[in-house]
Amino acid sequence: MMKNKAPNKIIAPIIIAGITFGFLVSAYKFIFAQHSAHPNANEAEDSTKQKD
Image (cartoon, rainbow, N blue to C red):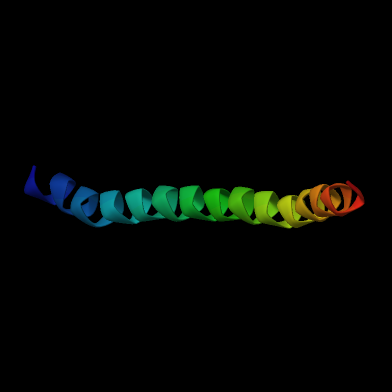
């Protein structure tokens, strides 16, 4: 019974770390996509403000 629990102590943290890493990567991609889209929107807003 102890032999069955020992692999879980090794595998579980690896799985949790993998899920966490995947979540952070997807969040980073989402934030990076938002930042790359916003400067274009800000430039358009700035150009309209300058025209007024």
